Length: 181
Ligand code: SF4
Image (cartoon, rainbow, N blue to C red; front, top):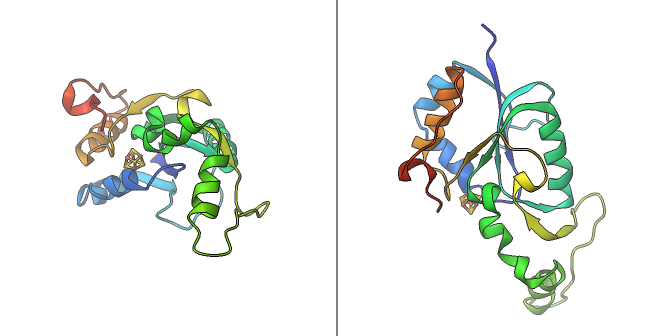
């Protein structure tokens, strides 16, 4: 039997969803016996591969690098899971949206709050420009499964992955599985 190719991607989020993935603790050993993890921020893999079966995408789309990455992830993955509230709704990452653009945030952080020599970072090809509006993943590409939570608990993550390993679509129902926050 072909082993499932699993990826995890970190976009505009705090990495808390990935920390919750690590909370799977000893079940990670069972998981490792059933899947190949082909891309993840936990490992130094430079290029998102072709032919990914399942990908967990943490975070909203907040900068140009995220925009490029999510298109690539969608093209190369069969099942895309919006992983955590930032991916599902924008959540914390989208709190800057009412300001109207990225400029007020950059001004506040890098000019007004600077102790000295305030300067907005500009390094084309190195520092990706912020988008004026942060968007949840499904606004940019089709999403197959929504896994809410800030972060989703390890139990939720395990329930989803176990269903997929059985070849079933996860049915997330009830407060325990679909509550935000
Ligand atoms: Fe962090 Fe919560 Fe967003 Fe996950 S959903 S990236 S834990 S803020």
